[in-house]
Image (cartoon, rainbow, N blue to C red; front, top):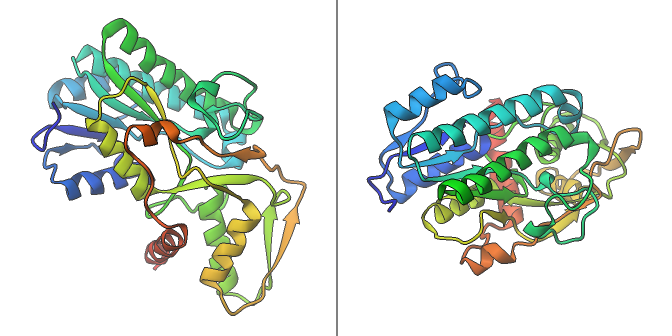
Length: 312
């Protein structure tokens, strides 16, 4: 049984999701949280990962470490994305098994589902269609991680779960102009407009693509919740169950950040839209007793405040 004295290893503790999991664990009273700097532990090196887990002997592992990015980087660096993500997952999952660690949660992504699958997306839709071409390398790696967990559960009787979050945002996000996801990219673009005399915002595509969001603290709560929850399912969607267009999100951020300035939105249709629509069916998570709780507007304001702290 996992309790407050259990040793919990968070891989990727400095990232958006990993840092939120650490915050949530500390808030809940967990004292024995294990993590390692990237400079001290290369997660793509299986021997080093195995040695680390043998020495630390965690009772539970969160795999929040991954190479992530937006449309541009996913499409441009496919080789790096598939290699690093396959390596990180495989090394942690297999080493956990070798060390007798029966419990872990691996964080996936809603992009593992087919590009044009039915909406909202159920967990059962996995592998039922063609992936979005701009991030297929990343998605294939994440799908391999899901299948690895399911296979180890079947053969070795482990309790490895895969949570599939929708687009996640919040404190400690990546705001790089080319490598970030759409939401932090919007915040950065709109903040720059606020500080300049520009009166227009340029968006990739036509603004009609729809996306679902979840605040990272909500996702962290889900991770800690399912850490202790017995489930029959190895893959569970985590999200709000609501989606809006990129144009809607842009207007929302504009109203919250620049309420007294008229900004015109322009569209660069030479750039890709990505998947047309992506909203998760979160009924399974609700059946297990979890649902999101953070209001979108409040989350945007919190995220913007954290962004201001990062750049000052």
